[in-house]
Length: 343
Image (tube, rainbow, N blue to C red):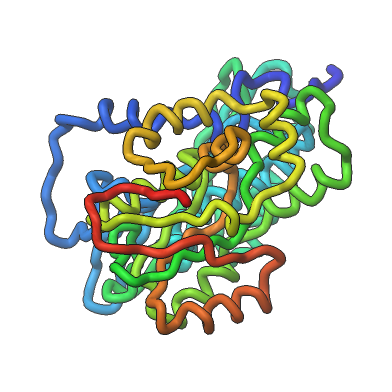
């Protein structure tokens, strides 16, 4: 049987397939919650992972993430999906150690392509020092892949998305535009060198950024994925009971994404993100629609949004620049009511 393009088997791609944040809040509303003092981070805080304290030295960080193919290369899909799942633990400041495969396979896929997806996941897990100990696979009309990840951290070292403090500086560690570019790529609008650069970015672990930020007074962090920069930024603002200020001119993004957004190559997830976040966004100056689309664009395996003490910001920025291709200060935090102000 001749294999088919993976992206042709899926209606949505990557983190763009996530249920919108607004819908997710409705689905979780009213569910019974078992309270345990050892559960110091749960789903009620819209954070990247849950954290359960074992003892004074050890806490478990647990998360799960999977999605449909965002690329046609099976092994690359596996690497990106695994990298994306591991990122949630890094965003909490934790060290991922164990993982389980989560996979759905289509009857239109060959055994070889399924094997290569798993190989890609194992390669990325090995790079991260993570052991994949098993998993679960079912048949479905769409292929999907990801990991359930368990990591560890000291309880007093946990970094949540709700600890941002007035005066903090906001740093972003990967450029935006992945969702727009991969949408345009389906129409063969993106040249191969740019796609390869984008794929390398999505398959790059946030471990390096995590290693840097934990050395400084980082008050909050989240990885920018399916809910977009503005969606995840809003969660940080509301969870921290502060206002977040973003400077549009300083936000790193792929320049081709602006052109593609202007032509209308915007994924459906961006519109869901806009519906959710825009009521809490204040546009302090005129921001062109394509740039707005980039800020609402769902990212797959995006970078970390770090809220760091202003006294440490310059040092952290320099350390990150020494290790990463793209990193920038994009804003700051002030006292407020949980809004995002874009100027």
